[in-house]
Amino acid sequence: MTDEKPSEAEKPEDKKAEAAKPEAAKPEVAKADGAKPADAAKPADAAKPAAPAAAAAPKPAAKAPEPVIPATAGKFEQFLKEHGIPAQRLPLSLEVETIVLSGDVLQAALRLLRNSSEVKLDLLLTISGVDSNDTYDSVYHLWSYSNLDELVIKVLIKKSDVAEGDLPAVPSIANFWSAANWHERETYDLMGIRYANHPYLRRILNPWDWEGYPLRRDYKQLVDCLNDKNPHSMR
Amino acid sequence: MATEIQEIDLKTDEMIINMGPQHPATHGVLRLLLTLDGETVKHVEPVLGHLHRAQEWQGQNRTWFQYQALIDRVDYLSGMFTSWAMARSCEQIDGTVVPPRAEYLRVMVSEMNRITSHLLWLGTYLIDLGAMFGFPFYPFREREKLFDLFEEIAGQRMMFNYIRIGGVLRDPKPEWFDKLKRFLDEFPDRIDEYETIVTQNPIFLKRTKGVGILTQAVAKDYGVTGPCIRSSGIPLDLRRTKPYSVYPELKFDVITFDKEGDTWDRYMARILEMRQSIEIIRQCIDKLPSGDIMGKKQMAGMRIKAGEGFAAVESPRGILGCYVISGGGEKALRFRWRNPSFCNLSVLHELLKGCPLSDIMAIFGSIDVILPDVDR
Picture (cartoon, rainbow over the protein chains, first blue to last red):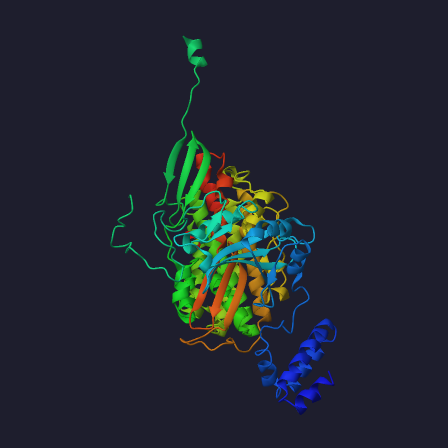
């Protein structure tokens, strides 16, 4: 701690040279849990003049690994890689681990994460469909009944890979949780992601003859459902 | 001739019957497609969407400030919890520090809201079971008193918009706490009153004991949460298992029954939760610190940093989650609700399989589904 402070105070201009140092030093601070409150208070008081420098430093190096990573970070990514499943961790949130999987390995990964003795992610909270700029994402929030583990899995499908008039496809996980059944139906209904091998994939919130997928960014309502009759409807 | 008749295989057809959407006991508009064999239910398919108001779409097309006011309508019986889930997920992205006084006030109003929600459930559940006269007005009497207290702090009786991103709207006056204490003193006697009428009532026992048993395996499979899963013996209460806000500083235990829960257990879990909420509110009043109540400036052009957040709270019906993706602008890129009613309703066809027609409403009512919360 003592050699950090004067160096920052002496030459606040040398941001790039200093940027590497705090990154290496901070995990050590995080490990020393016993002295945490005293240590954490000191830099907050002393480093106020240097605070803009510290805030500016991560920006140029945004793609580098985060400076402060909690002890559990990367746990599930490691676990999946050990079992030969390619998983990529996203630097989105420090609190909850977010990994990206490809659709082909989703079933195998969930079988491991749900049933293995080390990791027991057996509570499926929700499945969300997200229309990002160039991808359709199917997002899974997994918790555990027995411990505090949390994991967010994203399956990204590039819009350019989806054929004209076709829907992006992701394998269904309704064989693991019956809870997934309705969540997947809802995502299909609102976001237009087709879940392959789903037992009963049909619209759940909108009427069965609704056209289009309302939560997509390019959605336009074809028929004014209050005032016009849908010409394609058989009702 | 007689022997001939006996040898004929009397084939009965299954009958498909529509229950709802305009059914008085479906708490909103839910349509159940029942496949019946005589009086026995073979299969149920809930048909949802009659109350679909595109709440997630509105989240993407309203500013943060506007949408805050709207989300109380997602689950109109527990608006505090929907506000809280949204506020927590936005604070998670923004890194807003909520002042401790605001956190205590949030816990207090939420527990009050839990009581009002369970009170309405109790009244309407007894109507579902056929106690049409008299009883429903007992819980409504106490509910009104709590609504008066809500009205004083939020200006609204049901659509509070009280918990805001960064804190709470208004600091209650000292008299308000006196009124609340007076209510808390008399309320346990009122719960005794309900229990005298209901708990050991032979008709009630006959309708609920051993009916609609929810096993732990089925509950986990369908992601059931809230009092339903706790009465089946799984101690999943976010206030304890994943403590948030100031719950770690408060003393209370998770209410579970150590067996597979039937309809009566789900009733009892809610009664005990109301008693528990009283104790939590009392502790909050004692511990309430002084200080600021808002950690973020409230204005129409409010912005949230770019990022993703997921926050969950323990609502009267279960785990209520809010998944927000912000692009750093005035509106969200995506709002996604994880509604407890939606997930709890999906287990209905498992509970109803093989039960008689008359038990449908006893079982459906006991999982406490709010249809606006299902359809959003």
